[in-house]
Image 1 (tube, helix red, strand yellow):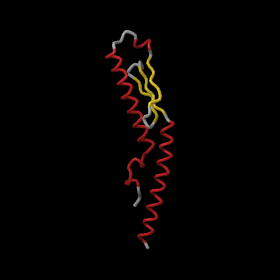
Image 2 (cartoon, one colour):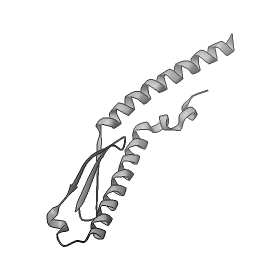
Image 3 (cartoon, one colour):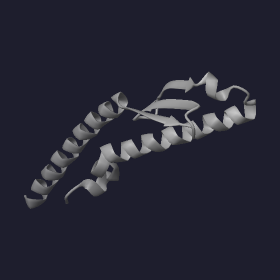
Image 4 (tube, one colour):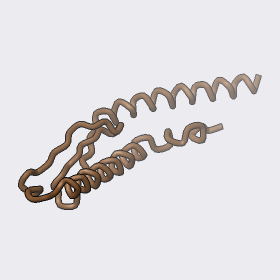
Length: 105
């Protein structure tokens, strides 16, 4: 009987975690982060689930750059936006990101 109570408690915890995870996923889909190259020549906006929303390039700031330099700026902005998105995801998921370790059993 005690084992059955433990199983019911664990099942409730799992269902609660699943509900919270779905809620957090929706929040991350709505939130955005902006990554930029060093001087803001290129900006990339991602959602908290790392879906691309926008890419902005300031034509005035890139005048005279060659393709290789522009590629480096885009790459820097992308890395920045991905890091910010991952950080946001980690903050939002918190203990849910730990999977089964978040269970109190």
